[in-house]
Image (cartoon, rainbow over the protein chains, first blue to last red):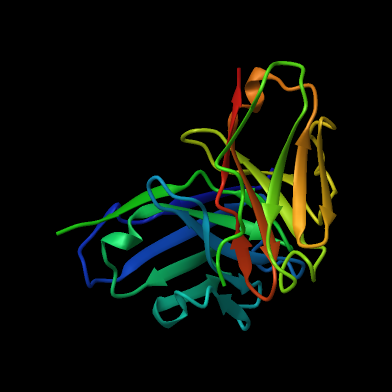
Length: 118
Length: 108
């Protein structure tokens, strides 16, 4: 059974880089059929797609509004994929989800709350 | 490009049917049959309910159905049940993914 689990610091200081990892079990991130994506939900707001990476790691695409600050990568040896968001502000406070994607987000992790505060 | 527009709230009594609309543009919903719908209960991860406009993943009740007309997609829930009370989001792919503003469904 496919499971995704987000991990990383729950508190990040303004101007620093937010780093999260999604560990996949029950499937391989190397599966050629899928992309792997990150989505977030700020408090009292709706869902926002951040970006996605193809299994090979060679193809990524990002939300245009975040593109200058986002990097998503794959580590096939650990069956993980990661998110880095630089120069964070309070507006980046959100629950961050990882998901398996194939033109829709089929399976989601439980999410992890990241708060940006000094 | 802005988020897709959904009504903030929709309500219905048990057993009734409701419909949630999702309005986009000719660049997203109107141009791609890649609309999906997600259900999110408080404190839980979103769950895929409909993909590619009308397709249901295995395990999703057939009380949920999706459709599209022009630039507007819709999610219908028939035989409303207490467990259907949640937030619902549409999503359209158009070189990027765009989520809707979200709709809170209340079962009266």
